[in-house]
Image (cartoon, rainbow over all chains, first blue to last red; front, side, top):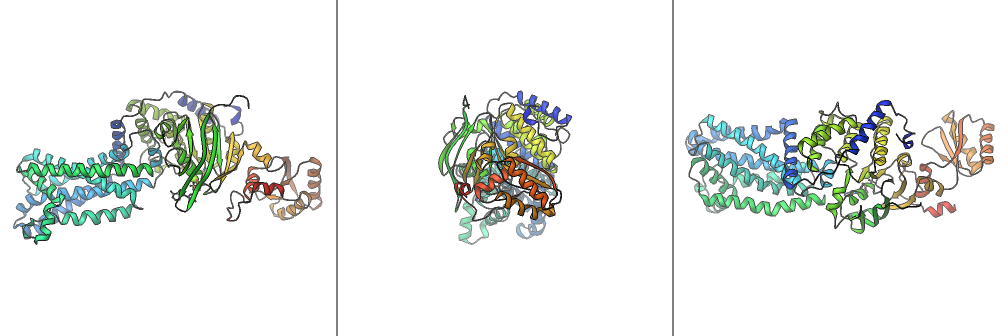
Length: 284
Length: 331
Ligand SMILES: Nc1ncnc2c1ncn2[C@@H]1O[C@H](COP(=O)(O)OP(=O)(O)OP(=O)(O)O)[C@@H](O)[C@H]1O
Ligand SMILES: [Mg+2]
């Protein structure tokens, strides 16, 4: 140690060894080339997965809630709405998949808002990485959770008698479509997450939007019976189109136009809200 | 000063307001490469805001700054490649383990996974955290968290490091460990901008200090210069019985013209430039039956510097306290 450390009162031998180790650690770092956008995004995605690993309870809201929805709708309303539970399950299961995954997107905004209250965001923002990487990475991590939730729903559905006409391939295609749409929609909630003051405010505002949108769709009931004005809304509601497209993919009668509309909506949401989120995140 | 090393930070007239509050109100800084520069000020002085502006996290409302030769607004990306930030709130992820935190930063800074892991292991050992490497950071003690925080800042050695109150809330042992780390970093060539509320810390670590209060730099210089600017020297007296301090204060006030009560309840001091006056004052204390544990004639503490510069001590932030330095000296 240099003379400058002479006034340190606790220069134990161990501290001396640590100083030597610190010297070595400092000496051996040539600066690597800057992380690519993909590398940085994947690293943030890994962070999201680690959080799930350390706090597995996080998976509860993507697993338990959908299970409740499936059971509740199938047995409580199924008979009344579609005449038989089996028939209704074929109609509603793709809808429940859509609903439960879209509900989970609100948590992306809540998680981001929670993150902002911690000092670690300052460090992320001071790193020389592709600007949207922390956000895109977090959403990729969330997509992994959607996959878990979606799988739980489909497996439960199959056990209860859900029979997708297009087989496993159709189910996977539908799940992929819903996740892509959820990715686009998440950006709306991350924007909210940066604009509102507290995680619970984000949660409330998020559900105030997503709840009516989901119920005013064809997720639960065929719109034929609805009054004309409401029906017009339900028909253009992107969530209806997503639910119809998922049903089509699962049962093998998908309308390509609907799939295109869903993908275009996801792209539009991303194009508007991703840059907005990124700007707000950088501004801090 | 013979050869001037290049400036690592050069800031002129930085201003940053949040609504009504002007957190930084025209700050100028010149920090030489390879030095520790202390920014000293009480709560709410604007230290953290200054750091966040310089680390490109906030855009200044006015003024400009160059960090390692790059403009903080126009070349923010270049600045970010050369600096690292250890924020006032621990800037590590509480929900991850210590090891995962360092690997994550390694990956984000461009290391391959294997190299990032090796680097994390090396740093955890160097910072005495090897045993706790797998524990979640939220279960770390304050001292461990701070060390991890600093380790996270040097996963790739930065040219300039911002350290915001690195020892607030630490016990003396942990504080000394952090100080040792800072000294080693500087010895290896890193420039450090250190924010602190502790006069002692700035005195121990910094080559130069800017004292900041209500968003403006009210004094700047080496620790020695700052002390000298307050007046000449001071007689420091330590009492055996703290209960006798009021009596001792009366005597010193009479003998030396003014007296300063230190944070330590058994210590007090007063301005005094010559040894004869000091001896006389000590003798008067004896005549007044004040029992003295020890006394010395030395430079004033930074605490006194702060009092003289602002009209209030670092601890007691008063509303009307912005007294002018010149008035104080004239008085
Ligand atoms: N994001 C913000 N929004 C509104 N006001 C802010 C914000 N950040 C800081 N301030 C205000 O700016 C002033 C300076 O704050 P700053 O955090 O820079 O002080 P500081 O010197 O770091 O204090 P401390 O020692 O308590 O950390 C304070 O009055 C604070 O309330
Ligand atoms: Mg601060």
